[in-house]
Each structure stands twice: as structure tokens, then as C-alpha cells.
Image 1: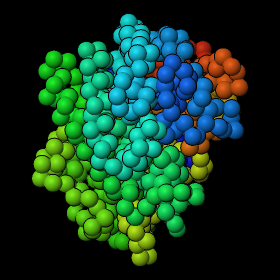
Image 2: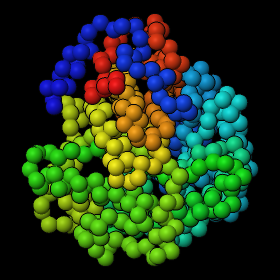
Image 3: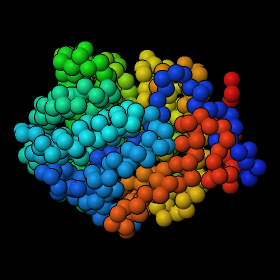
Image 4: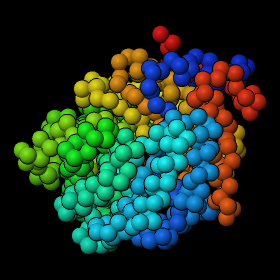
Length: 500
Ligand code: FCB
């Protein structure tokens, strides 16, 4: 496999034909297929203590070595008009953003903040005015701190009612214009990382499993409890939308799922079985309840009493609650059997180790067949639901060149993989690149994903287009001849792409 990628790299040195893509164009996608780009509230807006916004759990992660921080982030709160203009100029069909719950309802529950309401109405109006479809995520990690303080946030079932009431405000206020709602961003990743190892807020974990020193948490039980409550909150919100708004507003509602693709590390039977187990733990944890009303059997068997149960009513509520699935995919990993006895944490329950592939650990390698694998798996195992890829992109060191050829190579290959999947019958209906501009990437701020570079040392947060911005724009506009900026780069044929 590595040899194959050497060959691909060699291909990069071949002469560039002057086209955005040698082997496909956006016109090859079905009519209505949506191409967009994405950001999240906390990573883009800044203005954390302006106009009545109150803290979220993410407000504790505000500093970084590249000058970015949540306090100002990209200053999207003040620069949204300028940014929408950039999106329009680029040719985006759609823009995925999230609403900051604690900007709209500062205490998490209770009065609506009129200035928060105005901001999102303005942003949505600006997008629509430019013909850009808003895809709104209700919660992208930034739970109001007030709810975390009051009852521990996702740990407590009280969150289900509070989340549903917050969503009710969003549907009522924005639902006449917003047609695509995602409830919660990657619940599986949040449960695993925030409550399993405490790496990011909410920072819950217990020894010996924490990656940081947590002051609270229980690694053995909490990831399962919070994921369960997130599914119930999603399902309760979806029911509300369907009962009260859907007919009038004519929109759809879904949830997202973080999806590595995983392949066995060796050809042993143990690794093959471990890979399937890992798919059940990582993807099935979210998808199985949505499609079949309960967690995968293998999880029930291994996690036992620590895995919460759905009552019959809850199971019915969760089953078929999503109109679409939002897929978040960045990389493919190897999976190996981990036969040591379970320590009672998610990873050892899964009994599989996740091993990164590739030459450079930080720079996600180009394995577009991994995205095809995810889409095929969803198609074959979960009834081929409508899918939107809501995040996909490649990091580069924040201060590296604007000539981000590696990102172009990645996008070119992964969009080709989406086309392949669609041709093979996947119901994938949209693709959102992460991220429209460099954001405050609080897990590792040195690696950013933007089509636009943002200078975080500049008080103006100047945006500068990277080569990938020109490439995506060229692709979106269906242009076959690329602008001058692209003449100096070469793009290989997409690995695994067949133009059938
Ligand atoms: C995803 C998150 C998103 C961003 C990317 C790099 O898992 O949803 O906010 O940080 O990773």
C-alpha cells in the first residue's frame, strides 16, 4: 500500500494539464448535489463576552501558540458579511455553521438574548441573499457552562428537555429559512474524547485512563451515559420538529457521526474480527440505535450493565429519528486486536487499538478509498440513508505556505471518492469541506484546515486565499481551465478513481 502512495507522489511531478480536475467535474454529480464548506460557532465567531453571550464549556480553552483563541477566533461575529461575500465569490452552494446556545439563550434555559437572535437572523439573511443554503448544527461542542455547572450537562437526563427547548426556539425563529438541521456534532467523538480521556472540555475522566488530570468523571460509565443522553436529546428534538414544524417549514433534521475508516493491521483473523468490533463500537454506537433502536449486540455483550438501556418507548423514539446522516470523515486507520483484559474504558471495551497510517502523523494522508469505505458500509449495513458529508479536509501547519498543494490533492481525491460512491448507489447528497477558513482548532491549534489563511496575530484577522480556495472555486464553478494561481501545481489522478 505504501508503495502505491509513493507512485501517487511521483505522479504529482507530471505536467499539469491546466484543468481543475483531469477526471471529473461537478457536473458529473447528480442534480441538486450540494457543495459547501463548514465552520463552528466557537471556532469562528469570537466575541465571547459581547452582547449578552455567556460562557460555554469551551470557553476554558482560549489560548494557543499560534495566536488563535476562542476569545476573538476569526471574529466571524463582526465579519460575517465579509465572509459571506467570500463564500459567494467562491461559488459555495451551502454553508454549515453552528449556533452558539449560550449566545442565543445565555443560561442554557430561560430568556432568549435578543442580540444573539439578531446575529443569527442577520447571518442567515445574508447567506440567503447571496443564494447560499444554511446548514445549521444546533450544538457543536459548546454546551452552556451554566448547564454544566447546574447538573453536569450531558451526564444528566435533564439535558434532554433543555436541549429540546433550545431547539424549539431555533426552529421557531429560524425555521422558515433554514431547511437543514443537524442536532449534535459528532456525539461519538465527544463522548469518547471528553468523557473517556478528558482531552477537551468537558474534561471528565478517571484514573488510570485520563490524558489529563481530571477533577471529575468516570471513564468506565460516562462515555456511554452521555452518548445515550445525546441520542435521546436528538430524538426528542427530531420528534418536536416533525410534530410541530416540518410540514410548515418543509425542512429535514439529522445527526452527525464521526467516522474513521478502519482496516485490519495484519491479515490475522483476530485483527479482522477486531476491525469489525471497532466499527460496531465507533459507528454502530450511533447508527445502530438510529436504524434498529438499540446498540450493537457486541457492545451489549462486552459493556454489559455499564451500557444504558432504552425503554421500548425510547427505542421507538430513537429509531428512524433522522432524516439524514451527517458524516464527519478525515482519515483511515489500521485496527489491531487488543487482547489485554478490559480496564473498563471505551477503548479497552472495544478491545482494538487504532493505529495511524501514513508517513506524517500530523498531516492526514490521502486515502480517499477510506471515505468510499465509510459510505459503502453505511449503505450496506444501515439501509442507505441520505448522507451529507459535513466535514472532510486536510490540516496543514498553520504557518505553512499559502500554496497548499497537499490540501488540493486531498480535496480532489476525496471529492472523486464521493462521486465514485454516488455512482455505486450511495445516497450521499452533499459534501462540506472543513473548514472555510483557518479556525481556532483547540485540539491542536498549530494545524488548521482553512481554504483561507487567517492571520491570528493581526487584530483585523485578515483572510488570505490559499491555492485550495482557488481550486475549490474553480471546481464549484465547473470551470475546466484553472486560473493563473493553479498553473503551478499538478494534481495526480485520484487514487482509486474510475471514471465509469
Ligand atoms: C472535528 C470537529 C471540528 C474540527 C475538526 C478538525 O472533529 O468537529 O470542530 O475541529 O475536527
